[in-house]
Image (cartoon, rainbow, N blue to C red; front, top):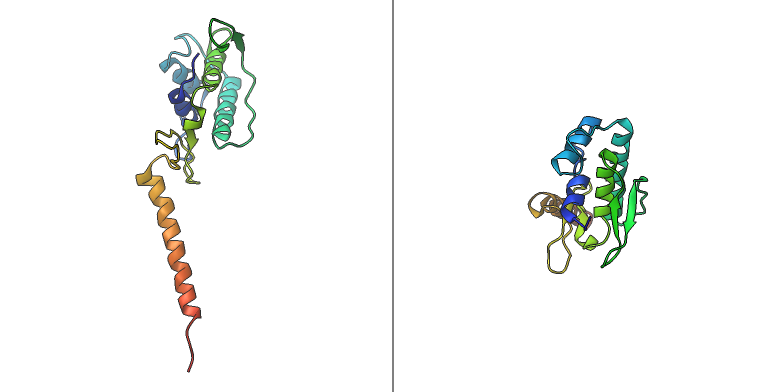
Amino acid sequence: MPFSAELVRDFVNTYDADADELSSPAEVALWLRERGLAGPGDRAGDDDLGTALALCEGLRAALRREPSGLPALPLLVVAGAGRPELVPAGEGVRAGLAAIAAASVGGSWDRLKVCAEGTCQRAFIDTSRNRSRSWCSMRVCGNRTKTRAYRARKRGSRRLQGSNTDTV
C-alpha cells in the first residue's frame, strides 16, 4: 500500500481528549470497513482494540518525533519492479491495522505533524511551502497559543513596572 498521509492522519485523529472514535472493538471494525480496510463480515475483538490504540499512540509519538514502539502486525515485504513495498498479510481487522502501519512508511512523512498546542495533539498535514506550520488550525490552536504568550508577556511587564517604582 503506498504512503497515504490522509489515512495516517485520520487514524491518529480517531483519539483526542474530547471524543474517542475507537472506544470498542465494533468501532475499530467499523472504522476499517468504512475505509475499505476490512470486509463486511470482519469482526474485532478486545485484542484488536488494544492493538489499534497502541498503533494510534505509536504513530502520534512518531509524528512528535519521539521514540515510539508500534505493535507487531502481519506485514509482508513484496519486491516488484520498483521499490519493495510493505503489504498486509492475510485479511480481516489485523490486516486492516497492518495496512495503516504500511501506509505510514515512506512518502512525505515530514509533512505529517502533530499540533504544537499541548491540549490538542491532533495530526495534520503541513501544506506550507517551507513546512513550518505548527498548529492544526491557526484560528483555534495557533490563536490560543499566541494569546497565552501575549498574556504572559503582559503579566511580566506589569510586574516589572510595579517593581521599578521610585521613592522620593
